[in-house]
Image (cartoon, rainbow, N blue to C red):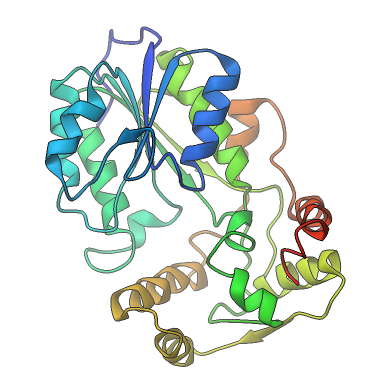
Length: 292
């Protein structure tokens, strides 16, 4: 499918979903710093109230928006109707956050919300662009792997398959550009967004340990052992199974290749993990250590 032609006027008002999340808050910051459009940041607790489970919040959030940064929920069921409503209310440019390898995820388990968002925006009749990034640097210092790193041991079922981790800030800067630049350049495109080099998770763990100045070991787990650890830590079964499916995609090598899409859009190389980790560790000294 292709985006509708003849609709490439630069948007004036951008609605950013997930505006308190990893990429969403950074997209809001980039757009406001550039002054290229009026920005409305939407989330359950943000300046504009939006809740996927409360359809009554959708129309007020969409009011006046002609471009949308779409961060889908894990549950795919509301996505198609929301996109249909957004297009009917005047959104003519969709930029959907997805993930690398999502086209290999199948019909159950990991990434179904993202897959639904991809399909919905392609069917919307509006301009659309898909962003498929690798795992974020910020998974190491904001949530997913922060607690294990603090505990001194990261155990995952990934083996030696490399991952070109990417800075969420680079993803957000790409999104801001795609949301506001001439649509002829980006309409109907799928961008595979990676960092500048592929590292194994063991190498990434050593990089972070070096920046933190303390021992942190990586341990290879079987998928079954990883699931058991997640459940023992209190993760819901659905979330544990979703992470297991994500790592199955990684092990298959679908996310391992370094791409040049960030450079094509931003005119510069993406950030590298090692200087990022050093910067996080330095800033963390004043806050009792991010990975302490």
